[in-house]
Image (cartoon, rainbow, N blue to C red; front, side):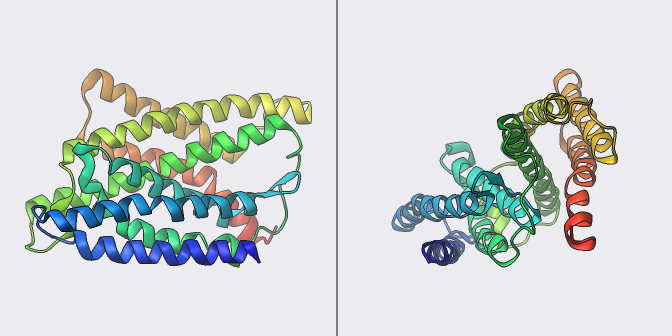
Length: 277
């Protein structure tokens, strides 16, 4: 019963804060001091559903001594982390316009947090009693989530760029930070995600030897994982040495994400939805 109440409270708070922020940040003048104070309070209040959402994720993922991380938990985790990053970004003066994005992200989080409740994992993962395996999965979850957020952020930058060339009077993009600030945030996310992806691949080799007593098997998931790592490594090197930015950076980001999607979510979808395993 407590778990159901936690889901319900988080869902309602997400919807309420999403509606309030959307109403008060949609193309509104920033000079209104009282409105700014109200939006600030709503922004701080976002922490409550975020914490409740994290609680539901913990309850659905850690079942006894086992670890359950199916497709619904994966999607819920990615959306939660997206909401958390955009919420944190709103405290930066250069990125205060990100508060505008918290509204639609909160609405998405309200739906995503219900997925583990409506579509629980069929069975817990095997070998989760090994601490090395748990650490590997948690690092992998963070890496995949952050790089997914990077891809969504890159798509947002594409829409923002088109909006600059074809502006409209009333648009959510009017209050967003400049593209340069958004690009800096993009590369911050990619750097952290890339480091975690590197740790994921390295720990995958160690985990395979520790649990199964054999080297890492070369499957399509492994192949696409290393290809994705190479794409993001090339992107960061191009940024460092050649100053890659704009559309080039966005294309490489999306290419790295697509290969990562084929490696992880693709295999999850086939096993759990199509094969029902």
